[in-house]
Length: 173
Image (cartoon, rainbow, N blue to C red; front, side, top):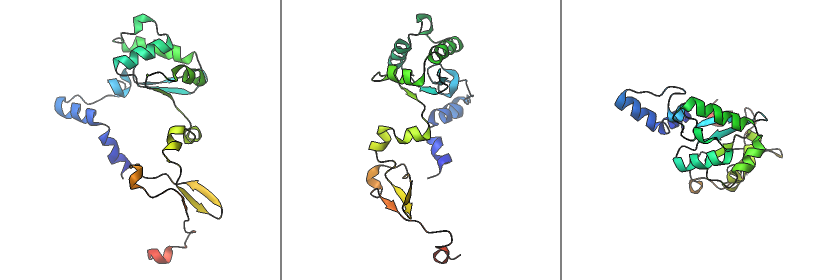
């Protein structure tokens, strides 16, 4: 699976807009390329980040309520003013405080986690993302599966790997 090729699947909107209208996306210029206050990464008080994507109105309304955004910024047509107001609100609290505030709310917001923190996230653990291992001499590392449905993957477990040069003959080297 080519990572670069796969990304074009997620850019259907950009490809369509560019090819049909000639309006290719600009960094910070469109709804999902950083222009909208509804689709941003905001810095918290403890220098962590909130990834925010409350694009639809119902999510935006919930988001505004949780952060207690002043009513004049709920209509976000002035993207710059609203982004600045939201950024100031988010910057006033820590990531943990925001995570608690958003817990159970329908808002499309998540604290950006470190790799180590992400590996402990219940949703990834429950889906078995880190259940596959590569092992040798009692040591194991995670071998993440290709991102396809679990039914198409081998059962989780630990498999060995050859030492440097051990498989050269098999590979014709």
